[in-house]
Length: 273
Image (cartoon, rainbow, N blue to C red; front, side, top):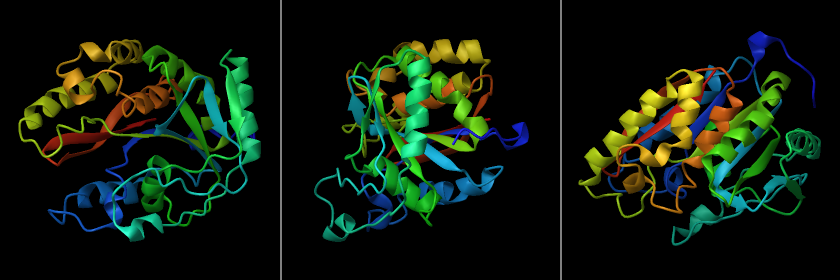
């Protein structure tokens, strides 16, 4: 799967919010809580230069000591959310895996000196299948999930992204799935509105900055305004997918393509390239 495409067909990289559990597929209060995020996710595919040959997805819901790479042929769904309506455990997303793409990922990681291991048995977690049901509902694009690192080291996740950057010229879309605000105690608390706004303003400026400044800002993200109120210590896994896709973006600048106030907090999405 290492066919090189035209530079004009180089895939971007995306950092998307995946919502809360199966939020897009259930009743919520207020009813329109997740509507704008759902509309944004549904619109993303139309922004691509071509249909991806495959997708590499980095989800906040999978962490390993070294990089895990799903290489199953037909992964099942991993319903890793709890306490939601029964019908949300019957959702389907029959996208194929791709042992070939997984092997390519492992090769690139090895060339970069990054330890990894294949995982043929893990299922797609909800950080993958919930947004993918909206973005690519036909479920006809092979998807390989790649784990985050338990170290939570931002520089290591930038390097992980750099290791995978050449996939973009092979027709592969790299997606980081998380939430730009993820403090469970902050949702529905109006005091967190200005807190999340301050961090989001910093994040927006940082992602649009020249690449050296952007990367340093991501490495030092915990020093940003209100950073640890938005992503508590040892719980920043929902921000780390942004580091991966920023690393994979190379010299491409980032831009905010979505923002909304959700459950009293500011949540945004970013594209690179």
